[in-house]
Length: 114
Length: 116
Image (cartoon, rainbow over all chains, first blue to last red; front, side):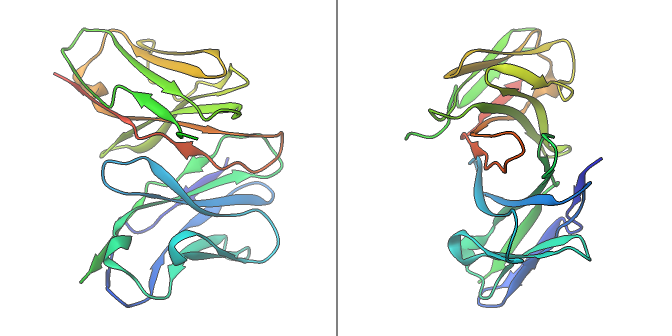
C-alpha cells in the first residue's frame, strides 16, 4: 500500500531564511510526487510535481523539491522565505505503474516570522 | 477557465436535514474527486469518478453519504440525514487523467458545512 508522511505538524522560519518542509513516501514501483499549498479559506493549489528525470523540480512561487529515491523523500525547499509563504502544505504520492488514487499527507503548517 | 466551481460556499443546517453539495469540474477534465477536510482527520478522499463512473468510494464514511455524476460537467455529494460530526470543509477537485499518466488535481474553493 502506498503512503506519505509529513513528520512535522508545524515549521517556523524567519523571513529571509531558507525553508524546508519534509515529506517521505512509500509506494510500489516508481512514484509520482506532488506538493500542494492551501491558503486560509481556499482550496489546495498545485505547486510542483515529480514524474521522471531531473531529481530537482522547480515549481511556483520560487519553491523547489528534491526527489531522493534512496531516502524515499521529496522535501520542499525555498532559498529565502517570505511572510506570504505562510500556509498549509501537502505532499502527495501515487504509484506510476498503477491507476491508484493519489494519497495526501496530513499537511505541514508553515509559519514565516517577520 | 473559471476553475472548479462549488456551491454553496457555506451551508448551515440542522441535524437530520438533507444537504446537497454541488460541483462543476473544469471543462475537459475526466476525473472528479470529493474530499473532506477537518482539523482532526486532515484531508480525506471520499470518492472519485473517472469518465462519470465511480471508481473508488471506499472513503465514503457511511450510507448517509452518496455521490452522483450524471454528466461530465456536474456532480453532487449528498448527506441524508446530516449529523454534527459531518461538519467540515468539502472540496471538489478535477483532473485530466490518462491511464498510467500523472495527474494534477485542481481544487475548488470548498463548501464549509456546519451541522447544528
